[in-house]
Image 1: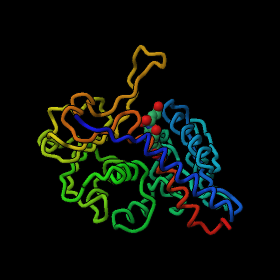
Image 2: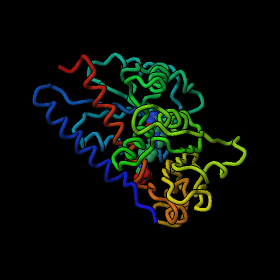
Image 3: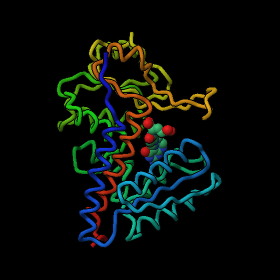
Length: 294
Ligand SMILES: Nc1nc(=O)c2c([nH]1)NC[C@@H]1CN(c3ccc(C(=O)N[C@@H](CCC(=O)O)C(=O)O)cc3)C=[N+]21
């Protein structure tokens, strides 16, 4: 029976550490770290995540600003706002919540963000630095997973790690990070995706499986090895008869996998809260490296 990798608990510890650091900073500096989130449109899940991020900022003592645009926003309006945030001496970091409406070129938006304020770690300059093991902002979800593995002392060195899903913000960076030379890395990584012939052939042999495909209950107990470490990044709203009208489903079939795994993340309460805690971490890093905070 697996033990739980309690992301909610660890995220609270990390936020408490950041809060203490902010209090210390404010003994000598005039202003607190400031994170800005840009939210486009009215998607329920996006709104919920961004509101949670604003709440996290309050908790750790950051200043936060939420900038909202209607889903009809033009690309140039967004680029103008990004330019303003890039130049602002009082903004340490900002994120543009994804996905964006189809009239907006996501790539153009990400390229416009000053890499020094790119606390999501999505800009190609930061992605490249990540791949080259240079100091930079790590994307929050992969950073959260690494931190969770680190805090639970899960050995990754020499392990076979299988990642399912090659998204730009989770699967692909995760595949690079798990193979890096620093801890927790040094795994032998296989990145599987929709064209992989037989995913089960890989997951059955893996010491660590990281699922990030967005397919509820995809990974079943019969697809994993005894003692495997299972990390579930998936979080899909599935309609049901509950008061909320939906429940949150991971990519992992929790009950059958928990019977065989050594460690497993729950959904909710696993990777999600860790993602948010690492955004706070990146923001304080941005603040500390900014020249505008004396
Ligand atoms: N520019 C950008 N940066 C992102 O980091 C980003 C994004 N766009 N677009 C969407 C995804 C998704 N994402 C999540 C963050 C926290 C939870 C989270 O806190 N989940 C809670 C449950 C939350 C709930 O109750 O709905 C949990 O798993 O326990 C989930 C998902 C960040 N993303």
